[in-house]
Length: 316
Image: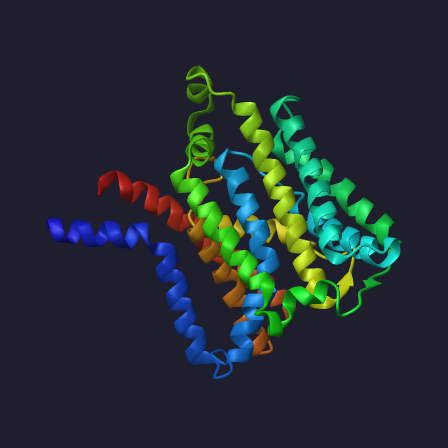
């Protein structure tokens, strides 16, 4: 009996990984092109940008907030970096640094509205979403900015070992360490669980709230730069709907929208689930609109599974 309970507990705690592994096996069986080196590499390169958004969104969600601006911040990062390279003449590295700094400022502004202005995260990030999208379209004048191949495209150059893949692995490792082994990570989770108790312990929660929105925007900008690198184009239209995919990835990964629950690696697995679904449907030539329906069904199943998991954790 005790052994059955332990097995049940393991299955509950690792359901996200089991879903991802099961889906991976199904994809491999359904399409012979799925396990090709080219396809696996394409999935990794395509998801580097969106995974940045997932990671940033997770830390906001851990505090009990939400960031709807990540898609627009991706567009801003793509547009601004391309503009600085092509129109200002900056080398791509300073252009990236400036773009990231702008992302931090925008996210900090959203966080200040939430922490000090008492705005709902939904409302504050919605305003930033609108402003960032408008700014990116103004920067590009509504037209894509073409980049030379020796600029941002260096980040996706196989000769250099695909730097964006190296960067995303390092970011995941760093944020895993921050969440599990630093006081910052523990406080962020505690704020989402019970912010009043954290404040009564003498911890200033407001600066942590500002910091997670700044982190989210910075990572979204970086994600937009990664997409610009792959396409050799800066555009103000990229990232539309990305905020919903980022939220869905976190939820599939077991994060609670009420805050206080979620993990970096599980959120990445949630993003991988969505990526595998999109990839296999593209390989099978499934039209785009049914893909959205299937994604919606997956999100519903994930939420129901989360509710079941929460109940089971009490009885196990």
